[in-house]
Image 1 (spheres, helix red, strand yellow):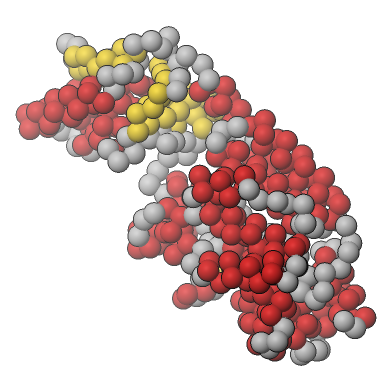
Image 2 (cartoon, rainbow, N blue to C red; image 1 turned 90 degrees about the vertical axis):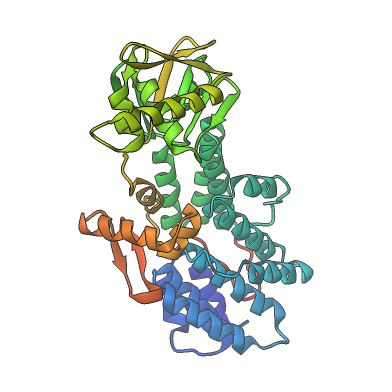
Length: 406
């Protein structure tokens, strides 16, 4: 490896893509193409970055399997940064296996980390958590280690475990400081702010107030019957009744929870569950059927009883009934929540993560764009959606022979 390639690699490792480009911008040999690709990724030009890395992989040739595998891993990282979640995961797994076979432990570990990160992005939290249980982060560089700690924090946040999340973020901050990459430090600080930002709303006794994530965790540990509108379930202690696939029943449960300790009028329940403003006998008959179904599924936790004007909820063992709702609620709130990470998402990636159709997602994006809440970059298949300026590409993968900085 010549001195200019070494210097460019060191510049990339320290988060200085312009310094790297000064050294290799006019070169077209395979290592220079790879480093140029990573530099362009750090500058946010993901399309050109992926093109350069593919050229580098072809230029390395079949006899340089390790270098080719590093190019594949770098391209996979760019795909995740640009939220191209449809990128072939099997190619990343094969590249990681090649790197492990040739004892490139740092980059092999980074490849595995990217596989787990993709699982988390598409909502496979259980699978990501199991993979992390047997993952060894010791070979990773400081920059990659910061990403690994952010991954641990992300899973802890989804599990509503704020203490492990804060511990992981503290370690991530320490690793980011060792890496000396400003954009990575900003990413860690942004994750820290999530813990101090309202994560939900508490609706109880006719009053509403915001809740931090730690407050949600504390509330769920108390002897309170919770109607969780974030996850569409009713819970008490360790018992849960999932209603995500029964939206009418959940709408009724939420309305009864918001009315507690009073009752909810029949017409209000009909409007909430069926979306009609003027109830007739058919609606009232249907309401009785749905309330009967709700009474059956909630029997372990609460009793649903008829009153003179409607229905009321009586918990069996809980002292109180509360409703937890998302901070913002409309049909586009879930799409907006995914875009809130500051990264750019394709509509197909959002559809994959949400488990819905791309057409439905596109309608929500168009409405959010009309309201000025999101904007897009590019056209056609390269179009990406985001809510904030694109952050720097925060991790570096050294494609030449590994350099010992840490």
